[in-house]
Image (cartoon, rainbow, N blue to C red; front, side, top):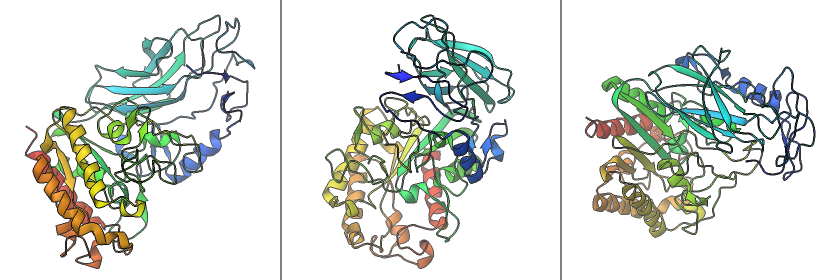
Length: 449
């Protein structure tokens, strides 16, 4: 339930004002226009036609509804308000969970609702919408089951009448597509730094695409992969050899380290992003993104020019099952943040321990050694770190992808060839990413029936 919220009758394009923040945030259509210019907004059913930077199926998230029943000013959310219209739920997001399930998450902007009503369209974002379920007051998530595979579903939510106040306008509309393929379904989380995150074309240093945690509005939580990104390449490679439904979720971000939370380095990158062991709401970033704890976990990112809506909800995270995998490639940035080799190895060991404590098989945890980093003196520690990663992988029974051996003749100190990076000495080129994908898919194939 939103505390101290004030719902004003404001022009379309402005948002609800919260008294705790005592400021008006104006973004509305201007922000959406910027998103559209950067890649477009897809509200249709054709999920395969999206460009790399598109945000999947979002209508104007801040239009406060049209028609009758405009909200009045200065509504106390805890006091009955006869004749008043409740504030609409905000920032509705959706994510496919399986062949037959979609999960929804939204923000409660009212305080007197008797519940929330969920509406669904199977014919696109323009509707018609049919009410499919409802949840209790203050509940802000819902799993829609018994759906058809590989089909687009669109949703909107509203606060049900309560406390004498009328039902709210509808939230923004959001569309997503269920997974496609046969069972058992296979999912993999890619958890790493910018080499895991960025999509780069060949040896061109220009970043073609990033995933949803790499800065942006809350809408970017639903952004699809670019075809040059590791996660998209995993899906493409898998579909070429197996019919099982596949979904790769990328949680990489440029400044991620293995530390935070008192385990090396600060808690956050300068952008506001938390590091792997930083606790937010009692859950670390690794646990929230790789293990799906406290769904939808938020990184608590502050409102900045990087995160214009503040904290990003990890709606694409999931609780891993028997045929799911984690790919972890971290440590490249640790020397920059004064994290020692010993601490990096301890942090990686902790991640493996958490994975196994969640009941997951050790051989479904894929761990890489590190490619060279010749742009920084910290790269001089990589040979010792890579030796430690190999020892760790062997002792814990996890799968080792020896990236250092592939890219370097001296255990991660220097590059075998300048063609293996994009000219900056740290970010590897697309052929290296393709090699990694081949290793990942080969390991997954041997472990999925």
